[in-house]
Image 1: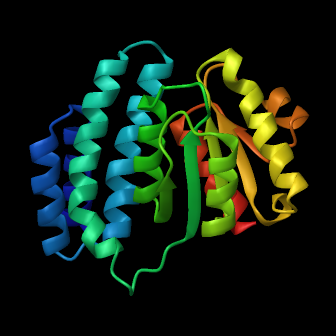
Image 2: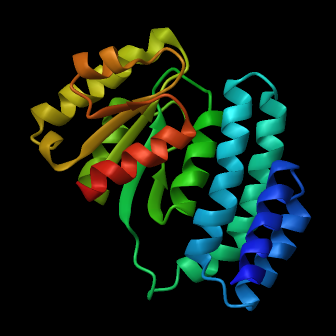
Length: 215
């Protein structure tokens, strides 16, 4: 028990330092020593990214540091993914995600996709500059538990509202929970457009999605 805890702490430290190769090696060793992939994620990778998230919010690190840490996390997830993708490990839920039409930003969205998948969620990533009809088509086709929309430009926020209105018009809205995020988005805006929630960062997005799925 003590050995596995030390292994997990080593993974966390390596992730915070952005040591992708070391994270991959330590994650592999932990799995070989009988630590479950869920425990590696919950007790090593996620805590590391939570530290990075706090440091970024406190302005003690830069976005480049976040990206380096996220690559280290991805190295760990690369080891876990084949195991978590095994039919014996069922998905916790399904998410369709994309950056709305007119917006080409994807750094935040890509981090969220990585975190969602690491949390055991199946993710359909529609990419950037996603039109309303493409969101609607994906919801209709994939029947996700969550639709997540991101916008980094104030001018593109209206696309979120338009997408929700179209889902309502086609009687698809009640079958999916909708969360929004991005710099110009707020909880008040989420309430105004009839979204189910707003996430201020990638970590809150994971917590919110899991809460909505479980409830």
